[in-house]
Length: 489
Image (cartoon, rainbow, N blue to C red; front, top):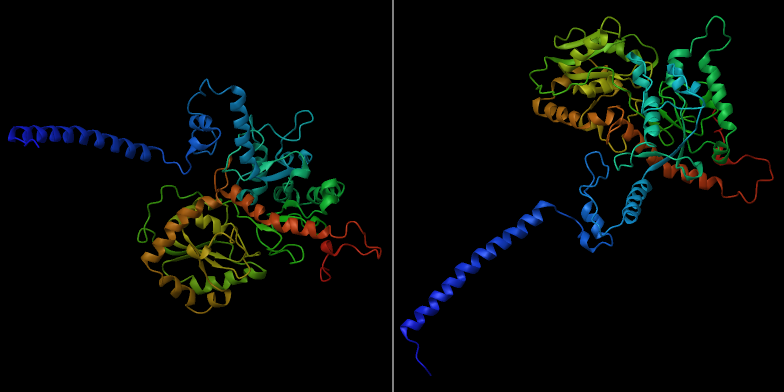
């Protein structure tokens, strides 16, 4: 065996070191290449394994508006036909998860005609791409959900499908989850409830009668007896006569204060927020110490029914130095004054009035003023998915009128707890914001989500009512699934 000389051993060492210093940088560069690649565009699924891998490589994720857009042109290996088929498949998948809504083409006298809009030709609806009829301001706005929901359905026909949008209008009622009745009932009550000198009945009552006759003549109503219909009656006095005839439908309401439980209840119907009328607090950087008023209320003090508690609280709190409790209205710049007052207050009172709810709660949320709710019968929007105790203080009526109970409770809430609730208000305020076009998780989309959560219950009622459709009851009795309860009258 040949012996290794010192010179040969040195040569081997030099070669080994050369290889080591050559390979190490290469491995370092390669490893960083994979690290940067994995971090640059993470994917849950390896799209190269999908049948349309070429196409998916050319399509970006949903943008901030939730609509699909192409980043680059399709490569020449994909034909236009293949791209169109794939695009339609994507749209179909998006549509499959929507709340499908059939909307009656009611005469304009029931909706935008109430705003002074005149149809062109035989059109039922305004061209929202050109001009949208304006809704009246002031307190009219607080019950304007009918306007925003109808606009959203009209828009769903002219924009691309998006995961952010819940409801989609369909033209075939047999494909629909619900049937939407676009009657602007709150606007009709606010504008036309009074009987004019030359009239025997108000225009509001006449339109209610006309609506009932129209609905009862429609095949969609006859098919379900109205169970799958959605009717908006947000103003407590709207649909006052027709509600007794259309009670099987799902109502969208502000509360149940003026409804017997047989006509409206939390199991069947949807509670929607008021539109706030005060200015929202944009770029709110206030702190616990920068809001000088501890507790704020400005509004009608002397009310009837459940609102009598306002008068009792006024006498309990009127002499507290850091409490603002005064009469107020929209007159004499009342909305601006209320905006300033809420923006500078830590807590805002929401007390039952003639009805359990008011827009004052939603004004407080928009002001990031922690609401103090004193209304035992109040029902709140989206409460099945939203925990109001995280940003509101609830006080029983019976406790609130005890001497010093309320003021001691509020004074006992310190800076840290208030700040936590103040931050939460800024997180949830979007859920109560009405706008057009609607955005993800705003009030319009949240209301549609609430309606969608009622659909399984609607289907249960419909399926239950069809059990004996093959063998009609010979006794002449009506289907008990739709009977008016015995204690209705």
